[in-house]
Image 1 (cartoon, rainbow, N blue to C red):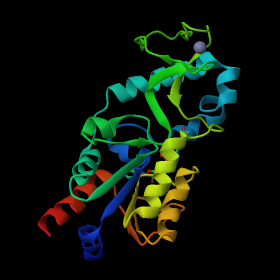
Image 2 (image 1 turned 30 degrees about the horizontal axis):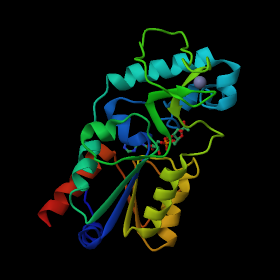
Image 3 (image 1 turned 90 degrees about the vertical axis):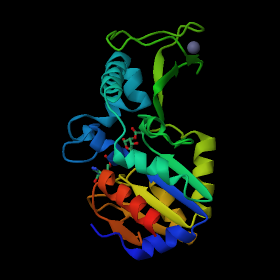
Image 4 (image 1 turned 120 degrees about the vertical axis):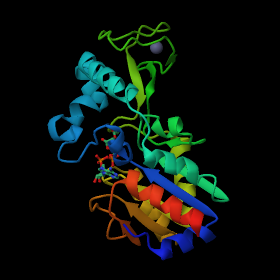
Length: 245
Ligand code: OAD
Ligand code: ZN
């Protein structure tokens, strides 16, 4: 795949670059996405597994599903897409990495600051009093832990459908989107708001918006450039071109 010189030119003079990622950036690490034909939501019901009501209706089922996802994530490693993004932060005066992913693979790849819009799957907290739950979790133990402080049910520190995003993270993401010169939307279907609104916000404030995705999405039309391919292939190429420019 050819990387258009227009992108390299834009990146070379950019003062602030934003990368926003979704599940697609971790697909090449062996972690299933949500909305692809073989994705998690093709067979499973998000209302049952990723919502407050779903948890209240069947907390053990939801907990077990997150334990299962943790097992998969534990066995996964960052891929060249994650590593390219980690390298990119060194190349620009300002760089912001915003992710919808909960798998912490960006941090594992060396990204120094990751703005996690949907929380993370590693930490837990009390459903009732929000106290962080810091005891080690045995992934083979299917039973739901309870809060030492109030006896409430323990839940993963992810954001579920119908919940607010962490306010500070969202605020930062919006300010960065308005401020950046180049915005890369990587491996996201851009179906879930407010994250899906960020590339559009960036565009309306004058950023050059680039989509990295093997498929078309709801933002493809708005993007200035669609680099059509897997992020683990496309991003290392962008990096290489930049280094040789
Ligand atoms: P989706 O599953 O909706 O979209 C994944 C995107 O990645 C699709 O557009 C694919 O075409 C693309 N993709 C697949 N393989 C790729 C690859 N190798 N390289 C680059 N892109 C690839 O995932 P998200 O957009 O992240 O939220 O979903 C957003 C939110 O919906 C998630 O954070 C999660 C989910 O429900 C919650 O659970 C709250
Ligand atoms: Zn509690």
